[in-house]
Length: 146
Image 1 (tube, rainbow, N blue to C red):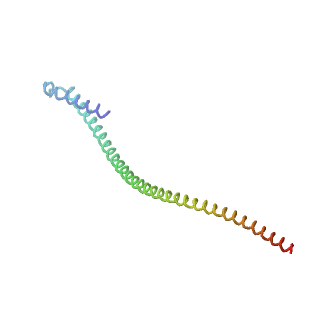
Image 2 (image 1 turned 90 degrees about the horizontal axis):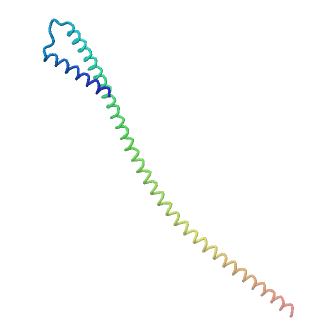
């Protein structure tokens, strides 16, 4: 903003100086106008130096900003690579998880089947044990009758 104001002032003073030269109002014997012109030149030079300094500062800031942008772009590339690796890893983990779920369901089915078979065998064993006890009792009764 100040750079714009400085440029406007410089143009204004240059226009005044040029206008005076065109009008021929500068006379070699007029020291007041010479002093004014010298003061005006110094003021213009000061304004020009200030404008140049501001331009240098802005150029430096531009270079620094461009370096920051480059660093940020490199960070983006690095982070995108990490995201890609993490995504691949997550997909592989999900695949393994799905396979483990399938295996778990299969094992649970087999466990239920085995538990059902155990129940059946225990029931059969109990039934056979009762029959054996009955047979032994009948045999003992028969032997006792004889």
